[in-house]
Image 1: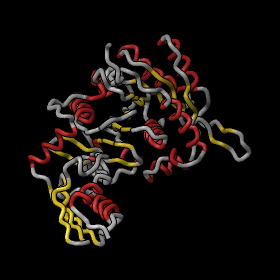
Image 2: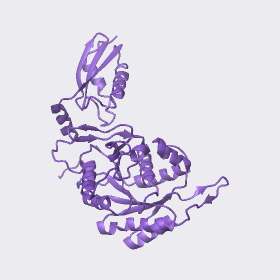
Image 3: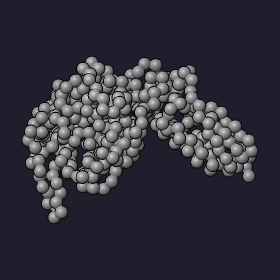
Length: 372
């Protein structure tokens, strides 16, 4: 039997990741003390808060990893709490040593694609599309985040199955992670059933905090679930993230299509690019293979064609999502339908593949070359 040392234990703990920050607990200075007595090991872990909702998972991950080490027969994990200096040091480490809270996605070197999902009117399934595209992209290996920017009508936490509040470290918010997607929403901060009654400046400040005060890490894609229409939040996004692109969601009916077109045409004023149109609730698949167009047809194609003409470049219709009971049930249960296999899932995954194909640009990358 090999002799167990503190160094061996700490090396093994390098493999244990913080479930939310997604970095080794050793790198985050969460491992306080390690005591080794023969084949027994006691590890003291410092949490950012005593009520950390994931402490049981961290404990389990540590026990499982150390039990794999030759020579260790028993493991005891003791939970402690960081003091204010330790929390501050952790926040500075996560923030790259930058004291100012800037929006990382607005910086010239940002490699994150920001997609604002919008619609002209409510009830077209914009949040469902956002949640499922995020889950599908993450399933495809992309690092994805979602900002629920619909302050009044937040629904992303339920649709993504978020069951606990974010962790706050010295003013920095660590977003919950569900289905490998990092998520933030005002719904995580207000009691159940309580309405948010804010005017424009408060809405702007909330979105700014979600973008600047949340530790997003290195994302490939950030999806913003915008409220319907062209109000305060739709105006704030291009101010906060000028490089954000717009994805328009509509339904087939003419009334929804006309309003969705207005939501997309705002990009001409804000100098954003519309990357496509998604038509939701397009049809109801029938047992004989035919399609029943409950809400009419052609709305998505109409919006895409009119926006292409108005904006002067091609705005494609990316997909037509059928009515699917699994889509509704998945949203209620917090399990996006895109993770399974159904008619709606297949269309959503195709759209996610299309949006995820764009490679990161060279701006901001270290190319590993030097002048001769």
